[in-house]
Amino acid sequence: MQKALGILSSQEGWKEENQQTNGDKVLSKVVPEVGKVFRLEVVVDQPMERLYEELVERMEAMGEWNPNVKEIKVLQKIGKDTMITHELAADSAGSLVGPRDFVSVRCAKRRGSTCVLAGMATHFGEMPEQKGVIRAEHGPTCMVLHPLAGSPSKTKLTWLLSIDLKGWLPKTIINQVLSQTQVDFANHLRKHLESSSTPEARC
Image (cartoon, rainbow, N blue to C red; front, top):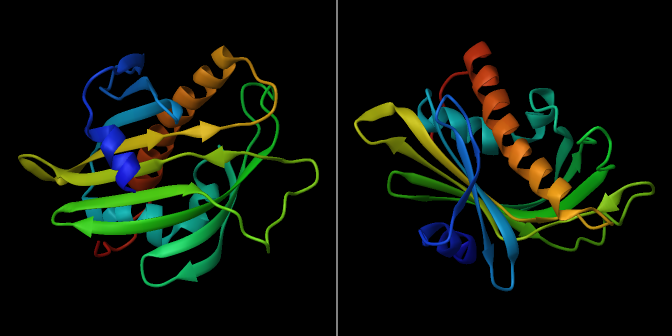
């Protein structure tokens, strides 16, 4: 978590990858010993507690509203805030990027009015590599949620994404897929939150 937050806190060297008309944007930079990372910055017209509920408490239901995710399962809980998960991603880029899955350790922490959701690849003996699926790896990855200044009913979401997709893929395709995945995530999240009326949860 500290490494991911350290990357986010550095304001230098970020280059714009994708800018949407609604203000959503994806930036990228190359980080020593990590590689290329992507940074999504969006404002969601929902309170932070609502996002926390969907992204943490209802994580296993993400495949129902995010077509880039086929399935997420919690393999093991470690204490109150930490868990090991298995994520099966959908094919992307017109099937140029075949099936990928991830085994990650994730944690959720609250620091004042800010929620931090962090994750990184791990090994878990009970979830070996699956036939026909390439085991990709998350590098230092995190989402930071906090109420928008002056508009507490809205949430600023910043998502740092670091992934090694493995396999033989041109960098241009990887860059396009990862930045588009972040833009798509924001759009699908908004649509889901607008169409559902789940009671608010506490972060």
